[in-house]
Image 1: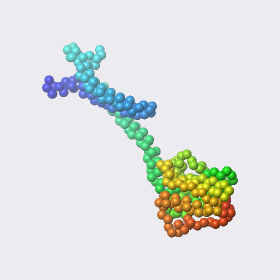
Image 2: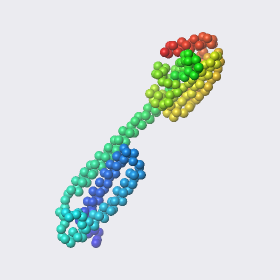
Image 3: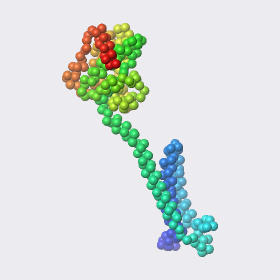
Image 4: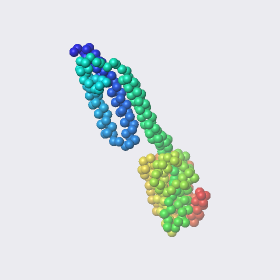
Length: 292
């Protein structure tokens, strides 16, 4: 059998039709299971196995199309049909199968692209939000009062307010107001979510413990996106020596965030409200009351 006769025989035995119909139906099936399987958490190896089965079945389908022919009596060998001289009139039903299969596969393809776009859009928006946040933006969350005397809560509130006020004087920093942060708890679990809500990249947490004339101030600066510590420090001071802690904290934060300080801002950070411990205590009470 020469090449021309061979291709003519392929056409006569409907091998071409079977090849096209199988390819379209296989592609539509692959697209369908690719969309449905993830909904039921079917493992990827099952999807790969089905696709491999479809590929292996292609030459098998061509072999069947060459050797057999569909007759009203069922599937018969092509040679037997030829000897009987009864060939089935050509029908165009296979064309409709191909067209419908192609339409389904195209619809499933675009459905998959649309679904994938909907899934990736929130992640892209989160990434864009995170990148839009300035690396020099910060929110100071309420400081935790660890004193045995709960009445000393004003002291923690006053120290937080004083640190916040000093940070707000640095023009190179974006500092969120206490009004926006006061309803958050100290040391929250989901820092990233809080940072996203406040529109900042960094969070300052702290705690105050006051006993008699001893004060412990614990602060930590955290990069919300990675939940990593940029800076942390513990200050153990006598009440009479606590005045400069807020300045030290503000300066350390500015250094950690690489904020540029003007000469005037550096002087403003070092200003002490008073050197009298009793007056300072009253000052912190006033800050706490004003903040409320």
